[in-house]
Image (tube, rainbow, N blue to C red; front, side):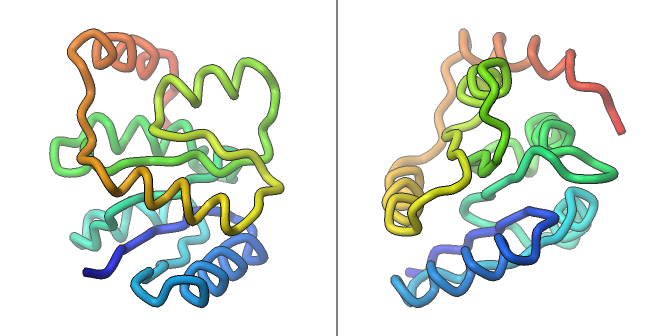
Length: 146
């Protein structure tokens, strides 16, 4: 069974690298390259739903934080696992991202580590406890809408 991954990053270098490397390492991966948060939302609205989203945080127009908020507040998309894939390495972003998303992966990264992390995330369905959901809901209120 194929694994559909959406990589959302304003860097063509990152999206090409992730797509080429993952698809070469494991032909069961199908990676869709997305160059902005806006394009990510547009694809989701067209029902192009991946099994996992790799999401950059620092993007023009709509940040990864804002995209994440849109995902988690939409009943159709709220259960798509998200891994932040970012160069933001400050303590606040790291802590905030690790609480919100299923993974927080900092650039630069090793492609085999990324593949292993993706496989672990896809092994189990996304289940969020009521307590964690309350925390996430409260944190999402602090992310401004675009």
